[in-house]
Image (cartoon, rainbow, N blue to C red; front, side, top):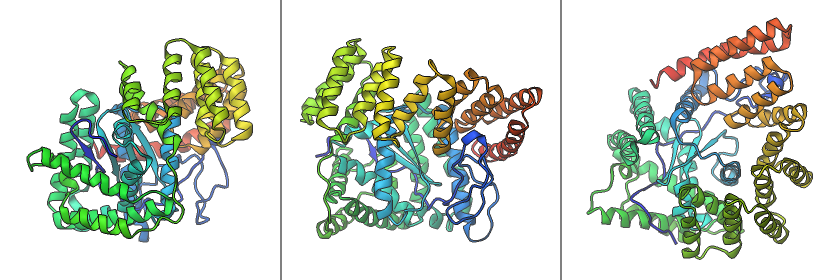
Length: 502
């Protein structure tokens, strides 16, 4: 069941288009010769996910969407209250990856960003950027309900709705995205609901101008979303439940929906169409209720109720969450209160009972590290990675913990992680520190520059590159100097794109 708490839920912020595949994914040593994209085309090393400013031929539209979408994300990061939770981030990314092959987007490059906001919102912008508010976890009691929102967004991607809409409104692309960004940043800067309303109102005005196309696009996205849900094992009825909840919200507003709902016209015909298709959609291999989702939801509730964490426990109890999720949240509350041994004992017991859930030992390692038990955190992280070597939250924590014990090893761990996650600002923050502590001063400045450009501070990033180059030349490091020069050329191109939103 969906629970309505608050005044709004929007399933997306802007129609998406298919992201251009094959963007560079390398940051190892900030130089990775021999890289190719998925089609075998060589890629310049150190190109950290932002596309070239010029794309020709048949991929011009996709390249443009990717270019603008990634620039939008950097501007958003510069002011938005990011929900920095590596475990929740990994969960949402895994959910997207689970749905992608059934959406016709198995080769799409997507980037997930989490927003620390109690507002019930998920959004998407051109270029494969998918955002999820912590508040959406509070709203959706079941994993399938959250999956229905993400699947709907992927439906827009699969049908190339943004690109198709642009064919009718070529000149509205930058103004619409820039105005939406301004509204989102107003909310992030303290404007609250007014900022979100401004952003959604701008989008609504754009789509209202093409309402016939918007409604058709929504129906297409619903159908693709249902297929994706079923293919991934989720109950398609969860999408219908969400629509009914939104319809009741409109009714409570006296028939005048908030502006942000204008982008998703919630008509009875649309709901009926979705209901009919959901009832005829077969789920070949149904997924059971996932404890993993309940655990991430507990983390989201704790983030939302940071000032009064007991409210998170009360909410879980009211929603009749699984007992394991309530014990998990109790352990997090114990850790916050300084009862570290009690928290670790509870988490270890949960991990023994659910050995396949990577987030349980990862959470225990986090608790140990936060309590100043660095050696314990390192030991726990290494033990888990021997069994689950690809679990990103634990690998990141290991790198962070090693900063205090073995900076050289920390640099190695974090450098490899940066190669896998070229769009992750937090990884580059840690990598910069590891490089500095291990005597790699020039590389440290370069890593710091990457973190700055990923968070929209492009002018500061370019100045940081200048410092990095001075250090590299003074210390006689030609490899670093060459990498820095290549990145400076790319950064200047990024700045041109970012200027379009200012």
